[in-house]
Image (cartoon, rainbow, N blue to C red; front, side):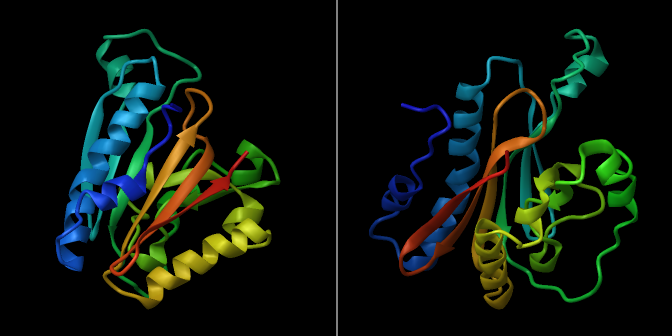
Length: 206
């Protein structure tokens, strides 16, 4: 079986017999563990898995570079710390975000990555995602996906808008990596509907 594969429907079925809210709580409690296990199975390098909560979302990430800092492993020019999964309940907000710290992240976007890329967020600011203080929520994202220009981008925006219009809905973002860097090849975005369970779409970020 593909080590990146996570059977979200099977996880939802484990909560069969619970009322809708209890089922969602069960799914939320287990999601970090199944995504961590899939991540560790996929990667041969060492990992330092941490969990940070900010607002209504929890960010599970691999703080790989802490091993380099401590001298436990040699420095790598390509391996980076990176997100494993981010999940939580949507908490819509309309105020403008503070992009000061984001603008300083690795410098000007086009200079660092090229014209086809943006600094995106796994969990959008509009639904409660962290901007300042949790760099694990920031990633190099295809511009047409981030800005809703492509068909995939429109779908991504549609799902984010649904979360904005339905406060308290459980949603998550899970990157799938091609190498040791923090730039994902794909991003899965999921919404957990109380009546029907997971709706998960995999978006190409190559």
